[in-house]
Amino acid sequence: MKESTQEQKEEHQRAVILGGAKGFLGGLGVALPASYILYRRWPYYRNLQPSLKAFGVILVAVPSFVISAERAGLRYERQRWNDLGTQELETIHERERAKWERMNVKDKFADFARRHPFSLITGSWATSMVGIYAWVSRDPFATPLQKITQTRVWAQGITLGIIITAAILTHRQSEDKYVDHSWRDILEREAAEERAIKAKAQAEAEDDQKN
Image (cartoon, rainbow, N blue to C red):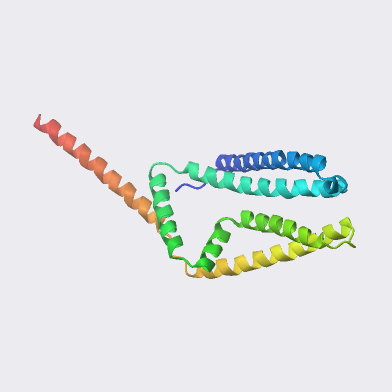
């Protein structure tokens, strides 16, 4: 498989940026109408400070941006494969699928964390922010600013714990990871194709000599 050229790296970067922009706009497309509906129908939300309302919009738009950017990058990498690369990619997917089915829950979590780190971190951050804010909002004596501060501190701690746990599990999984011989499979396929082409050319030459 050829190394990425500077042009391909720039194309990959553009694909990631474009995917992230689409995700961000999609997140805004959901968050802004939802915020408007809440403002019209819920007096409690209407009385919140503008910073809290903006925080709610960001809580939707930022994870959407990160996840979409990551998926766009993966999609670009898959599109670069062709011919023998496509066959090898399908073989790798079959191996990964079989390996996934043999995993227990802990190993599956570690494998997901290895393949989708940004989605995991962003998703855990957003989920913890929503859950913790709902919990601290039950305190009638805390000001909105205090609630936001408590939510941020707790969410950072939980997200850090998830990152550390995922890193430990991923490290343990990598120690038992099988050796990737995909390059050898590609070389074998290329050699087989070359032999087939030579055999065909030789057969055609023999037919020409007979005629």
